[in-house]
Image (cartoon, rainbow, N blue to C red; front, side, top):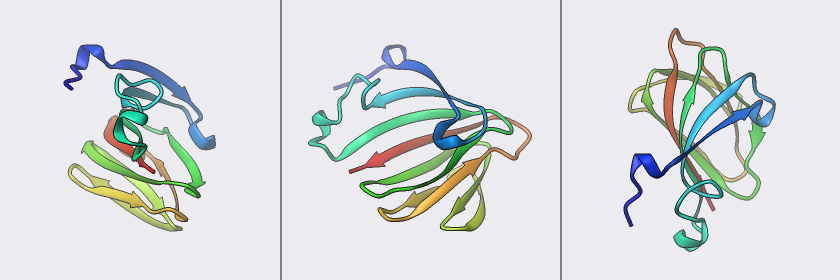
Length: 120
């Protein structure tokens, strides 16, 4: 199956997990995507391209039933992974395993683009 960029739905999400501001999301897999979680045999909960404006992010949360990864496609992103702060750049990846916690914020000077996957 091919999913073209024009088929992907853009959604605005506010204060995700209690974090500041908005995220602009282009969903590929999941409830707003053309491909459902069931299409992935339940393995991928979501696959989303996110644009995170300066000063905005996702609040701290624990993954109790899944894992999540963020791949930085463009920009600079600050991630607190299990209470340790890191600055990620283009090509860097954060993987938060089941039972782990993380939060992220764009402390840079321009918007950040990431690819986010929730893995069941």
